[in-house]
Image (cartoon, rainbow, N blue to C red; front, side, top):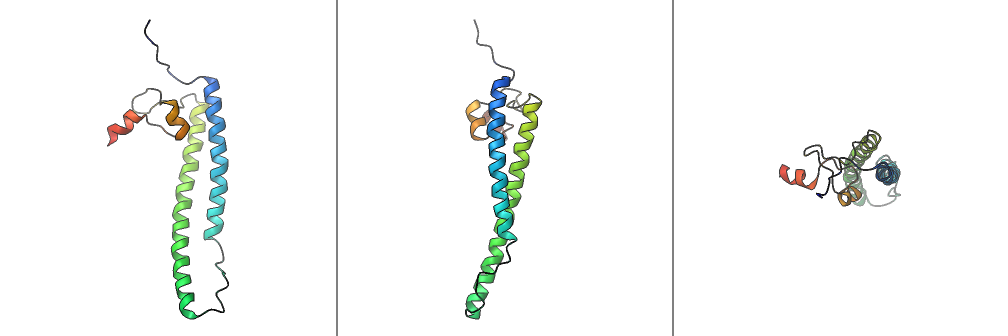
Length: 127
């Protein structure tokens, strides 16, 4: 008897993935709030009474830090959006199906990258 390949993950497996993803969304949103508060910070680090040279370095560093935090926040927002899209796929019972091959994405891959939409096979074809 040939081994039958599953067309989709079971409802129980989908519930497990949903729990995992919702946890990741909560953590990602908390991280995003930290990033936002970091780049919206008033920047008052108490350098008012220090030398002007140090203050110039501090301001340059602050600008770079704000840019880096902004980029991180943008990436975090995309990550959250991808996770929320994964929840929608779970609700539609299409979660874990590769959008290129139509085969099930390996469960280990989904546990590591729960918002994945491509199997390793499809990902390697892109290279």
